[in-house]
Length: 333
Image 1 (cartoon, rainbow, N blue to C red):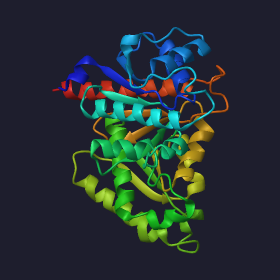
Image 2: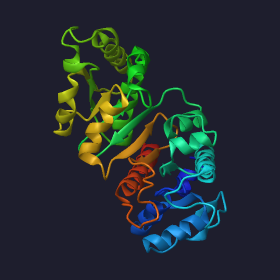
Image 3: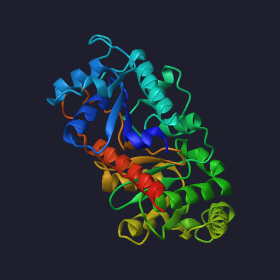
Image 4: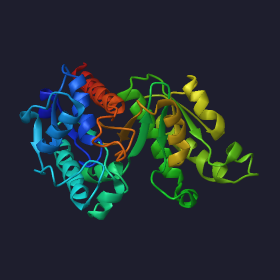
């Protein structure tokens, strides 16, 4: 068993120091004083202390902070991103990712970064998901958003809408399906996962009247995933392509355990409608659990003391749950 699992360490990357990341981290940890895992926050001790003052919560103990930067109060201003904050957030993420890949922490929870300002500082990845997959050396990965009533995996992530049809492939959708099935079984304890795959076009193409992607790409992906599942050691029910304007409601009502959406907003709009304050972003396919709150840097309220820790708390709790399930699986006969 890796040392990190036996020590039950949870890694946290602080996110953009100009955003709400430091505040939601200190608020969440203040609300979880008896968290069943110890934490290591990869960030900046001064920024976290200032966030504690704003949030009026006890500061994080220094031994729980891996001090990646030492920013003075004048170096970064909450709500005012800069090249300094852009570089710093990349450094926190990179340090936390190295620890997770090396097995120094059992799971990783990431506070929000700014894709714009990270990009200006040289970050070449579309987001956390792609960066962490590259750091871990995995080729099959996907982003799942999970709430109490709805879980959604997206087959493509940060693309312009006009690029989505060409980016969809049978192999890519099949991979997203299989990653979703494994996450439901291993991460959420669903014994017989039920996964619905959304169509791309209105009415799922209406038998070709509104597009042929369903017949040409999506259905073959479902069949490919079903064949691969049939040759494995566990069962699942995979169906589709379903009418997109109905399938998310059906899943939220309990008919399915998760939906595979085909593009970013198709999946994220329904999850944010239902779970804006408590949805968790989960990266599938990594060798360690990684979760994140389902919100951004929120520069408009950074430094005001108004940032809600709800989504970050949900991300913390899910990370702990996922680690525990892995420990239970390894310890079971």
